[in-house]
Image (cartoon, rainbow over the protein chains, first blue to last red):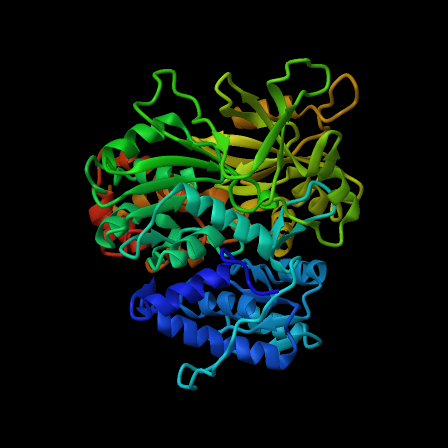
Length: 501
Length: 82
């Protein structure tokens, strides 16, 4: 099948043909034009196809410190393969889990591999390792491979309450649907300068790359650790399109760098990934008075974002969180009442339409639980687990979760995944992880009910899980509290955690 | 506040995070970068600066301080607050 008009590679190649000399990518130590990025990714795609990677899953350590990784993403898609980005900070054990779960048999090595990547390569000799192509090598003529209609674009992992991380399989068609629908709502030009804040193994980065490149715009990658200088950087880089988790906005506010009038070039400020507080909006309106401020919502399973709410006017005095809005394009939403309730406008949010992913890979039970058919409503619906209310105007408001899932600095964390990882080293003891909000930021505290060496437990978690899963503290109790019906009394543990116990 | 007192204050504030990430006090030399090392995320760093501001009664211009690229190191914090 020829590539669809809004396929990410169609959009990139069209921009490369139309604006070859415009800057496509700016990183700390240089920039690449569309022509350079196109040539470099062609060379790499050619290598991948020659190695037999067409139609396969290709993993890579997704570092953002140079242009190479961006060429790698384009190359994998041009080769008709699927991207499996690995969190650069590892740990190696987590990479191994993701390689096994994704079934990726190809891996694209980094130009300057980290010690952890060298260790992975020594451990996983059975994989086909492809090496990056030297910039000096002339770029071959390469025509991006046509792909079947159900071709996968990427696998991104989300936290799972039981059984560890789940790989979401997102197709090229899902991404094309998102790009077509999103670009139908908002207008960008080749003069725009986009932020690239999101880590590449996080699907919101797909928006950063391909919304920017579809418009012939420049994608700007910040170099500073943790976004502490984000406001200064955005001003100096003359950023016009901002996209980040609200937490980054909170960092800027608390660092006192989000000062009135400080971001005059900004035309759009998009937020996604966690609840957006109205109090943050007021400061953004003052800092970026020329910008439209839009709250996006969508889980990885529904491809990047599926609803939007544009802030108009001042924040309400009562504060709270900004609505998640209405579905855009052909996306559909449905609210199903929770058990024991009859209010048809409040309950769990279900999502439908062309952005709904194919499911979790190698996890048929989890897929069947979350990707469901609804009588009288055609297509597959994704059960978000998000508790929402729909107001009279059809605007959705986020209330909370129907389960225990948390967001830690925008990362989805199932506390059960922490507890399950600890269970293996607790000798029959139990672990329960709960959130604690410290200075407005969600952190984790884990309670265990057996005498344990806390340093050893934390060390075990560091070896197995990404840093944002590692709790602030592990507290040993004689016994974990239970509710009258025998479940862990999480509200009580949350209360204890908040009290510093 | 002299640098010894400041060092003790910083270590006291970081104690839980150091245990969490298995970082030992001897590793926290002047060049140790609290954010790049992953010991603190950006909000954790701002919490630390806020705590040091409260303890020393001194408010810093963080935007200016961060320009140098050293403000997130131990040395940078000594210079900001001692």
